[in-house]
Image (cartoon, rainbow, N blue to C red; front, side, top):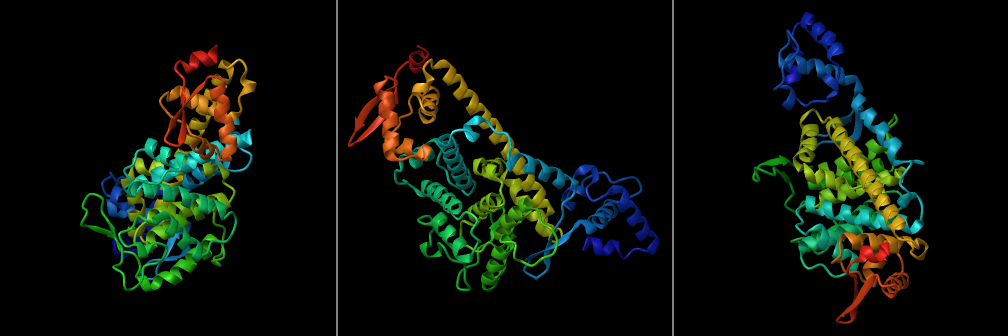
Length: 439
């Protein structure tokens, strides 16, 4: 190893490296860089890149703590929270939990909360599945879920499964995480999508061809070989103990860091034939929600992951190739959460402004409930979008009868046009809807 080689230097040089480590710190310029990046940079005067790296590693050593997660050689993974991580954690604490200020569309009417919760679950289900290869468009996927129609292909099945899996984990509430719970989560996620249907909802065994992770570009190059299958049951139980904070380790572990490391743990062990990434992200959401970060219900981290999948993979790779230092993955994931929070705030503020504008436009706004206002706002933006009793009920998490009352009322007032297709009614926005509303 590079570090061991440099530490064989004479005592005077070692003293110099310790002195330099105090000056350079664990994260020069506030960046927790990997050797892969640092080796290409200009080192401080009088140092080689190798010496600079050793000085940085010396500075990082006091920050790192052991985790109950171990690698294939039983060496523990480590984690640290440098200043950059602490700053991001403070932001997440301030903006994702407690009594935070949010637009009235979320903090006001209960039905509005249900509406935006369902939308967020659908968004995460789509993006998480697309990250794993699903090719269905957002519009088609939303139409499938809201109308409760059966999926037409594997991609649609992946998205519907993901949506149902997120709902399943929300229903777990604050219950302890158990191996049967995670296995059921995986079964829901992968049902009807695997080449080997028997692999849904079970760990790989010694009889299976152990799954590996391949490079996205060089598709024949293995970048991660997970632990052997015979170790999985014991590691699986340890992961659940870690998630439940019963692993017996000393010291405080920030709940957001715990949620991120739970994501990392399942991704590293890769215990399933397929669907490991989707399972890991669902566990992350469960852990965040369990710890009181309620805004997590309105975030889509997969949307951020999907825009730069290479960075997602490198965060794992950097952690595995630098003496099991998961700080790289933690920092990356924290930055992703921050981006997702910012996106969510912008989205919710925009939706609040749209509804306020619509309410202002409609002179008799007391004639419409929030669900109807949301539908009318969407109808103005998408005049060709049809609505059904079932899609309206699913979108707002209300009963079929409530949805029927909403749509029939809008039709009777002249804002929707009812058409029959087979045995089902579809409601379309009338022409010049905005003019009618303004009038």
